[in-house]
Length: 185
Image (tube, rainbow, N blue to C red):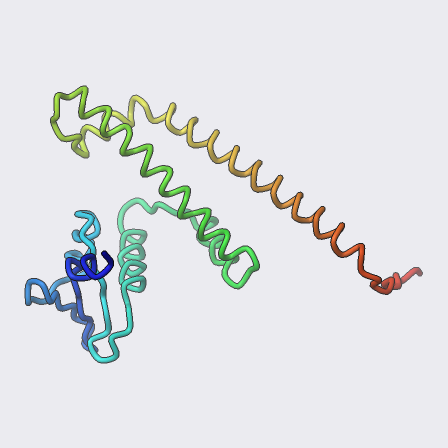
């Protein structure tokens, strides 16, 4: 099954001159074209033309960087700084998984609304303009729903962290560690 997936996945080669070559269409493409592939949910891999190193994540990050620099950014400086702080931290893997699951949950909610709305619109596609109108009316409700979800996630995370600390204390209290002297002045 994975070989079938790989055969339908587009291969894009990045050359030293920073040009991107789509092997499926046998033509050079731009970062905007790669962004369109993402928007169209087309599977693709970007590799270095010389070394065959996978550069897909780097290209996706480059697209995000351009999107953040143009128009209305999705992330505040405070959020970006906090994400940077998680690199090299013991919680890095958990944070990545947490963000991925939350984005997936948000996507699932969006798909549910889209499918429900499509039924109400008798099969007509839910256009970006319709989403804008919908969000103007339903935005506060959805924001409240997402805030509740995030608060619940935060509370569960804090409970899990507290349980881990308590389990660690119990586990390590069984070992005969020497007491650490305290400085009393």
